Amino acid sequence: MTGLHPHLDSGATTVARAWAVTRADGVVLGFTDHDTDLAFDGVTFAAHSGLSARALEQVTGLAVDNSEAVGALTDAGLRESDIMAGRYDGAGLVIWQVNWADVAQRQILFRGTLGEVTRAGGAFRVELRGLSEVLNTQGGRVYHAACAAVLGDGACRFDLNTPGYFAQVPLVAAAGGVLRFAALPSFTAGWFNHGRVLVQSGQAAGLVGLVRTDRTDADGARVITLWDSIRAPLVAGDLVRLEAGCDKQADSCRLKFANFLNFRGFPHIPGDDWMTAYPRQGQPNSGGRIRG
Image 1 (tube, helix red, strand yellow):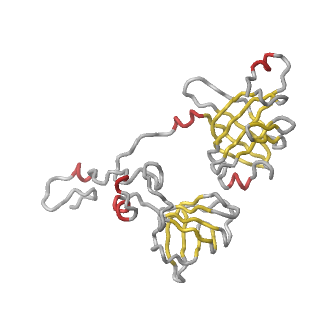
Image 2: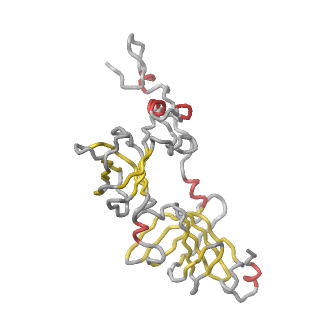
């Protein structure tokens, strides 16, 4: 890649913009406002997408760079079904200014993520958020009894591929946020409470749902209820991975996962009753309500 400045200084320019969108599932899509496709860095930037951007606002300091892009919803580009399914939520974005006559001459104008996406009348509008957007996120630890880690992440360190903590099973039926599977006698009812559902095949492949309840019905079938329905069609036969759930309590970490060494909560921190209670024989300061 060579610099674009000599070309811009020439006074006769052949420049266009190119966008590369990288979804969380690894799919990369390219778009350009040029009238023919461009290709570099292993990405083909489609000209037929009709994608265009408003003026890009970039500032020094810690303020957030922002802009908007608009375009047409097409089968070859951004599909409404994918947007509805949340496949573009938080997707990475790089915008180049490129010499379309020699794509080796280019420079990055913007790097960030996609924000809110709206669609209407066969078109979409997407908010572009700069890298400094993450500075608006609250950080730091909260001191409470429950674990602050997410099961399987770098702080928890539990391996969710451990036998007995996941199951890959075909879907029997789905209605909204309720999924039905054949009997799973190896897993006690409630084992997947607070767990995850990862769709492995079908139109919803790659999407994730969070488990609200896990029970066995009168017929012996396993019934999983999600907090929110999967935002793509699910049909019988779709392969689904069920992952064990964690309620972030110390006893569950110790007994269910044998992972108490990595527990990221404070189970022995005094509760509100410790600050307000007065000495009384036989009344422990357990963190619960104060008994009269």
